[in-house]
Length: 444
Image 1 (tube, helix red, strand yellow):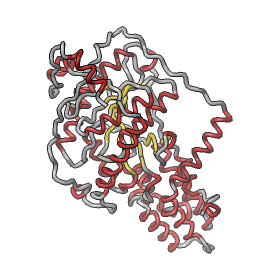
Image 2 (cartoon, rainbow, N blue to C red):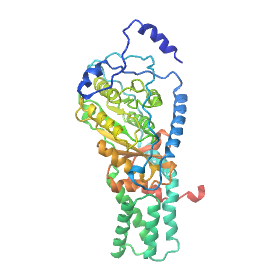
Image 3 (tube, rainbow, N blue to C red):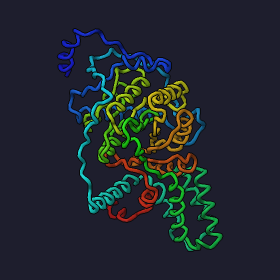
Image 4 (tube, rainbow, N blue to C red):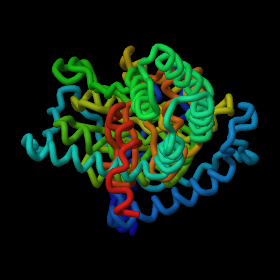
C-alpha cells in the first residue's frame, strides 16, 4: 500500500527534513503558511472500497454518538452530554507528496463537460425527486400527517376538541411549541372568520399554513457571480460546521458533485484534522469527483490548513472552495473558540470569506437541533442550514421549529444516502410530500 511513498522517500531523502505545520497564531499566519506542507495525495486503495470502510466506521461512530442524544427537549447543559474528553493524539507524520508553490498566474483548471438536461429530462428528474422525498419522509409522514388525517375521519364539523387534538399531534411530531402555537392560532382565526367552515377545509388550511411557515426560509444557495466572472476575486468559500456524526463530510462530497454539474470548479479543504479518518474520507470524495484536496497531517492546525486552501484556490482560479471542520459539541466553549479562529483566519486572505457558513444538522436529534443551531450561530454567523437524515427519523417536524425559531435559510435537505438524495429545499414540495398519500396503501 505504501509503495508509492517508499519510492518518493528515496527522492525526498536528498532534501532537507520537512517541518510539521506549526500551530497557527493569527499574528504570524502569513509567515507560517508559507512553510506549511500542503498535501494532495491520492489514496492507494480503491476509492469505493475505502469509502465503504470509512462510511461504515462513521456510521458506527454516529450510532455511538446518538446514544448520548436525548429525544425530549431539555436544558441546554444536558444536551448531548459528552464523555470525558481526551486530548488529540498526534500521530507520526506519514511521508507526503509536497505540492510545489502555485504561481499566481497558473492557468484556470479546465471544467468537466456536463450534459445539459432537456426539458423532458428535467421533468422526469423532478418526478423522480418527488418520489424520493416522499419515500424519505415516510417515517415523518406516519408520525405527523397520518395521525392528523385520522383525526378528521368521521368529523362533520370543526370543534374545540378537533383543534386541541390537532395541536397535540403537531407537538408530538417535534413541530415545536412556538410553531405549533402560531399554526393553531392562525387556523382558529380563519375558522372564526368563516374562511374554514368544515373539517376538509381545515385540513387544506393546515397544509397552507405549514407551507407559509416554511416558505421564508426556503432559499437556495446562490454562488455569487462576482466570484466566477472577475479574475482575482477568489473562490466562493463555504465553511461547513456541525457536531459529530451529522454527515458533514458526506454532505461535502454530494455538494461537490452538484457544483460540478453546474459547471463550476471545486476544491476541498480537509479542516477536520482531529479525526484521522476524516482526512482520508475527504480524499476519497476528492478522487471520486476528480477535485483537489488540500490537507495536512492529523493533529495539524485546522486554521492553517484552511488558510493554505484559500491561498491555493485563489492562485488556481477555483470557483468554489468547501472547507470541512472538526465535529465539535456545541456546549464546549474552547472548541467553539477554535471555530471562531478559523473564521477569522480566512479573512486575512479574503475579507468577505467565508461567503457561506453552512450548519449541518441531523433531523433525528429533534429539538436538540435548535440548541445546536443557536450556539453555533453565537460563534460564527451561520448563513444556511442543511438538514440531513430525514429518511431515518420520524422527527422531520423539526424543520418547522427551525423555520419559526431561527429564521435561518434552509439550503438543502437529505432524504437518503445517494448522491441525488441531497437537494435544494423547496417548501411546497416538502409539505406536498408529507401530505400526499397516493400509493401508500398499494405499497403497504
